Length: 253
Ligand SMILES: Nc1ncnc2c1ncn2[C@@H]1O[C@H](COP(=O)(O)OP(=O)(O)OP(=O)(O)O)[C@@H](O)[C@H]1O
Image (tube, rainbow, N blue to C red; front, side):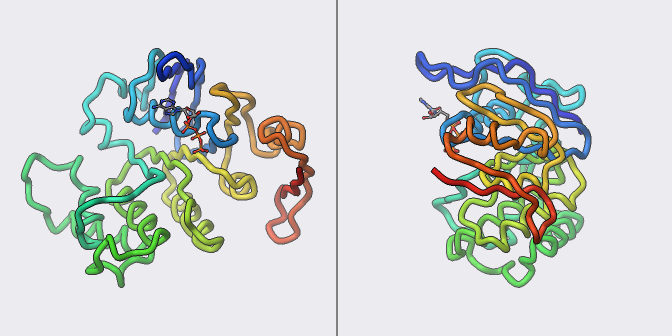
């Protein structure tokens, strides 16, 4: 599934937070959004997945006009793993993941055996089978993040949007979550803070600065020391990481 988000502008009060930003994701492409705190990554993603309405611009998923379509219609194609996953009421892990099936059902339609099979597969992919009867609220931050990913996998989206999906996760889980998403073989748009992870998983990167697309291209073309220094106001040198054999980053103030 292709995403074409064109010329998006988002204002909050008098402040222009997103200024004419365009982002494209090709079919089955893993696209990263990087940039410093407060540059507008979450706002840009929210304007794409309908959590807030942009002042102007268009968002298309193939031929589906996202901004004028119902939440349910959009959710049949687009799944979101957000930054904050707190809930005030408790469900088991399995019940949480079953919620991912909602966009595909009619009102009050009971869960079918096919739904349970999809949920089981999502729990297996995220290594949560042993957690299915656990209470969601009793889980650690990292475990909750995996449940949210499992729920989004059960939604069977063709495009997944992830807003800093590796927040709260230790190094191993950071790799696990992104590898799991990559293995789905669907289109992905992910805001990431860790540039080493961005290099490992992204086919293409958009760098955001002050609400604008500052640079875009293949990771090794975008993530030059000059661009990293301009984005984050730090010193940076790149090198070939001896473990991953990919681009690595050394930083200093
Ligand atoms: N409702 C709002 N009213 C006013 N300003 C807002 C509102 N929401 C976001 N902003 C501002 O918009 C800017 C962009 O915020 P956003 O959360 O999109 O950044 P981000 O790049 O995702 O940051 P981070 O990496 O810290 O998560 C910030 O300066 C933020 O304070």
